Image (cartoon, rainbow, N blue to C red):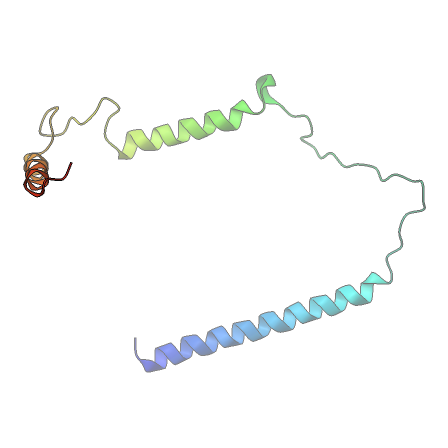
Length: 118
């Protein structure tokens, strides 16, 4: 990307920031103008609470367990699709680890022994 591209991106970002600033100020002005028109309810009157269409909705009687079940099933499915099996590493090396890892592990412990580290 050349200098022209970078200058173009900067100009577009500045234009977007200018439009956002103007829109924000227009919203503030509208809110200030409308704030004097709002009338509070008469004293002693409680507003009616809105509970929505799913107030008290609990599938199977345990509403908090359903999202938790979905969470574990979803991530369990992802684990089964993309990661190794639940039983451990069963790649082309059987139940062990790849030879290159075994060699690295042996060398790492030899270095600790040479330096006297615990």
